[in-house]
Length: 229
Image (tube, rainbow, N blue to C red; front, side):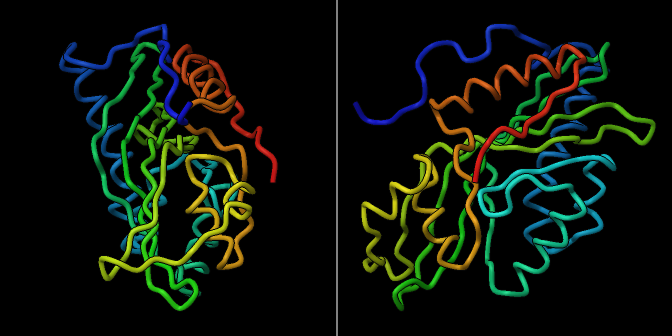
């Protein structure tokens, strides 16, 4: 069977996510701003604005950086950009699950990660359809994100000239997790260590993420470090 997202209900327990009171709607709007700040600020190197999204103890996960404290991630991102990493994001939609009495929310942002490469002398983009999750809490400074982690659903090579792409071997692709295999091969070619076993559409990480969503919204602490290099 072709790889696909699991068919059964992913999140049995529902939270406020549509309509609701004015206070709930405003809280969800604030969290949606945090989600959208990732591509708007990070893609343009607005590092101070980007840092405002997160708590002091926040951690973020990407394929190429692993799980890092937010300050280390900003430093690594600046270094990567200076070395030629050209990563952009297209926002496809944002919704928020909210438990206002607990001061907890999870922002869910559909986005396409698009990165420009030159591989085998051929310029190409690699696009990866994903869903960002932002585990947010209400603080004296307003809503902030403590964790950011993604589902990587599917990826593909995109020819810049409309016809020519490099050739990736099956062996190279199979080294990495389905859902972001092409992106991983491209990023590995730049010297980045790739974090395998990040959540895709149906692996163990998919289930763990939804368990973490429920725990977080119930007011519990979560630990999103479970992958291996």
